[in-house]
Length: 289
Image (cartoon, rainbow, N blue to C red; front, side, top):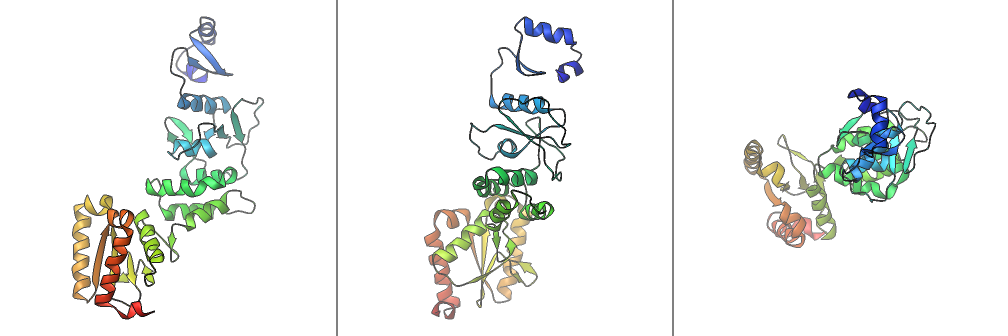
């Protein structure tokens, strides 16, 4: 109703439209145009509007709006940032009045004011902790945020009694290699190859000759690079930089093995064999143990 009033629709016109069957009431002050398709997005929009002018889609609802897969049966979660009281309960809407008011500047998702990614993951951990690992993976692989951004968000919300942070922190920990944040799913998949096929230990994000590499096999001259198409195949500057780095490392006596997404994800056994052959050629001592 507030939006209609803002558009110049009088209160009398609003009620006449209902009497004539042009509008269908969903919640007090919130209606839909009769004949429009009843979609989930329409229901979410109505629920957030019904909760109040400062309400934000949050928790499970915010996760869905950020593209994180959620069940269709989820209720509508909203946060009231100012902790105002609501005089009416709305069917299907769960209202949260948090003590932790950090990260409550609204983000716009499908024209719905929504909690940002960090806040969403914290809140999701409080009510559905089992969903947080997949949600973190979606956020990082979709590049909605970096590991560093999520890590700093955890630090901001790590107050005593803050529900959800433990699940969030544990999920993010799966994206850390040697205490350092992984840049991509490929690096995590490469780590798993080294563990699964009992390859020698590696140093993650080692700096060699002024360049950071994805992995260096400890005690050997062998460097491993994971080349995702998005970062290494489409950007000419990145391509040229990678080649300059390879030349510098070769001149310094290092051997660089580059593996693509297909190599790492679809052909892990073949990738492991290629690494083992390189070890036999360049660092057989690393295989003795």
